[in-house]
Image (cartoon, rainbow, N blue to C red; front, side, top):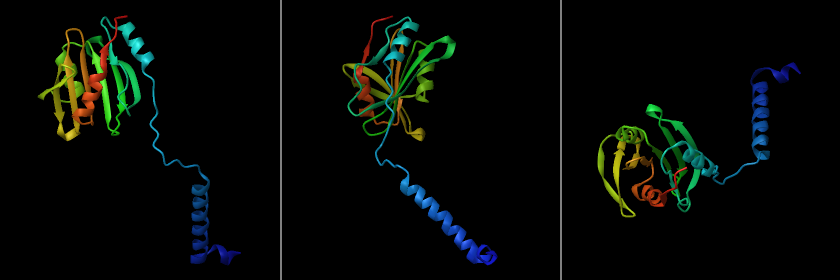
Length: 176
């Protein structure tokens, strides 16, 4: 037995046993080759946010085709303002986040969400003008719309047409 467990022969046998065990484990473990992005319903979060803020909340009428809502939360912004975040995986499997807040100054909120304070252009979506901002080094594009009572920001790695798809779906819900 001692000859079997010593030297190169013993090492080779031990290595073979380990590799065989790993191979057997991989063979019997269930594996999925399909993409799975968890879908999270944001309707309760939007409703709760609507009860906390003094303005009508903006939310998508429906999700753009092929998009998967995968995160949502309410957080505290600057100066005690509430911020609603809705995250998506787009049809092209890029990330997009929709954020809204009545934080003042509105430009500070928009700049923080966009990681930039410089407008690079505008985009017309459904008859409404959105300001475009871009951070090349972060592969981040942002649409900003500042309204009297709330600032809307759509940002992420998606291209401009995909960001516009979400902007086109936004509608204001009644206050409360």
